[in-house]
Amino acid sequence: MPANPMTVVPRGTGESPALVGAGADWHTGNRFLNGPFAPWTEENEAYDLEVDGEIPSDLAGALFRVSSNPRFQPRNTDRYHWWEGDGMVCGVYLREGKAAYRTRWVQTDSMRVEVEAGEAIYSGFVNGGTPGRLPEGAPRAKNVANINAGLFDDHLLVYFDGGLPHALDPETLRTLGTHDFHGGVDVLCTGHYKTAPDTGDMLFFAAVGPTITWYRADVKTAEIKDSHSFDIGVPVLMHDFAVSDTYAVFFVTPAQFRLDLVAQSRPGVVWDESSLEHGVQIVLMNRHTHEITWHELGGHWANTHFYNAYEQDGELIVDGHRISRLGSPVDRLSTPVGSHEWFPPALPYRWRVDLATGRATEEMISGVFGEFPKINDAYTGRPHRYGYFVTTRSLADDTMSDGLARHDYLLDRTTVVDGPDGLTSPSEPVFVARENARGEDDGYLLSLWWNRATDLSELLVHDAADLRRTPLARVKLPSRVPFGFHGSWADHDVLDRAIAAKGDDR
Image 1 (cartoon, rainbow, N blue to C red):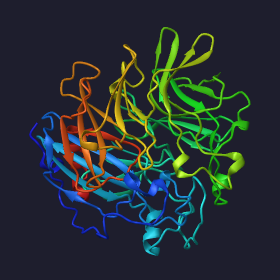
Image 2: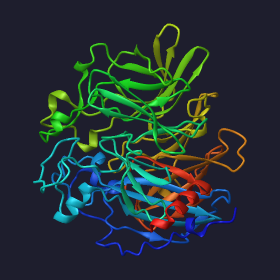
Image 3: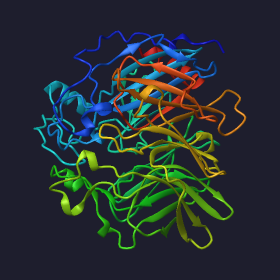
Image 4: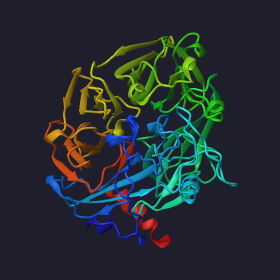
């Protein structure tokens, strides 16, 4: 297929972004407003980017990431939390060894209210804060659209756990409005989704208080083809889940999201061990029958993100990361956890459920602290050998992540590499399979790193099968992408179809 120049050099948007200085200095010691987390106030685009090394010729498409990037100074900079920044989408477009770049704000209705006011209006929902006066007709809560970005239904969908996703043009990154899966989702859906490898359907859920609603959206029509709601008893902060061929997997932990406290401008992300008399539980929903089963693990801890889940030899195996605490303890909400102590180190764990007896067990897989686990997504719900994550070994004052890791579950071996030339703060790695890949790890790892010397970001392309400090390519970006959460890769065929579908709307 001939190269489509749109994915190498995106066309101009016809608009001139307001350039008000690259970084904002709000004179605060809050970690989440400094260093790689600090806001970047420009929308940028650039073409034929500088590359050290060589972008593989079969790496064609786009890496989409969304950053957590407050557009206005938070009303309470001491209470501001990383999860509350406005969404700014970054697209790095690759084709024939060349790279182009674009960033744009996700223009949510709540952001428009603050742009009109020229200042932050909404209070923080994690640690509480100081609310402003909402204008008449303004949304009651803020949709920050900052968790994840991926192509579906010929749109770039940007997700937030507390509201509907927003649809963007995948080339111009222009916000088109909210996306409700053609009327199938009414309030919100999670920032995490899985793609069924056998059908391409999207699997996801919504969490509203103690109610979890499961969804399956058809890959061809984007319509909801299956849904089921069930009650877990407590308002767990349900951010991620896992799927196997048969089950959707949810963990019930002491980490809670309390809407009643948010409404009082008090900390809404709460650690409440007293809410779980028997400790952590695994809840399984049969994807085909909707049957719900409960399995006790015990203890008080929280999962953060999952690699995968699969069934093998009568067991359900679930891989993910485990953290000792997530949120402000319920007995200290007047003095919530500060930014420098918010995230204790997380470790890779494996959980097993005996499908005959229902007994659940756990074991630590690696002693390397880390976060943002990923696999080759073609193995979703199926046995996998490799897992990738960013390390969080040093707990530096200005960064959270400090290296890139690959774990081999067969050999029980973790390989860790640091960034070249002092690069640090890597983002969640995204696996991209090589053209005509012959194995699970036959592909590339894409991640964004922070260059302290330039205060800019770089896209690093590593060989997923041979992880080394020196990457295959370093793509120099013209701005810093504030440290964010999740993103995805769109292959050139999917991207080109989505761009073509938007052609008549421009």
